[in-house]
Image 1 (tube, rainbow, N blue to C red):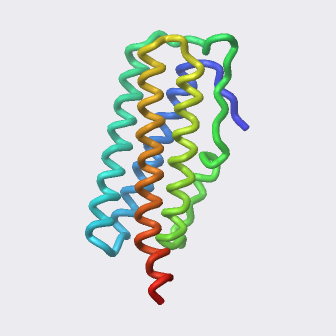
Image 2: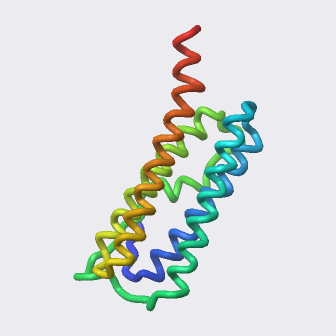
Length: 154
């Protein structure tokens, strides 16, 4: 498990994770058969791109520092698996993966919020955690509406 000790290191990781999420959701949108789902996935991709830009701004405008009280931020394991998403994965598998990815992103940003005494950074990372948690819930809804309901009606 990777451990980060500085804001710069954590921001670099988060920026890369948001880029990877953007790429995943954009590709999922291109592969989606339902127009509503496609539009929703393009929207998720746009939100991840916006997150990346916000993180880049934080990196540009804040002095690089260590975390408070020797606090370290741990990277959730799912991020290492993320680069191994297979092109032959079904849409259902990709949705389940996206749920796990977003849940882990929320946990990561909560850890980032705990690691800072700067109130602006705490607020920023808490907001990012909430938004990523909302993404997970929305992916769960898509999964349930697309796959769980379909199985029940069979």
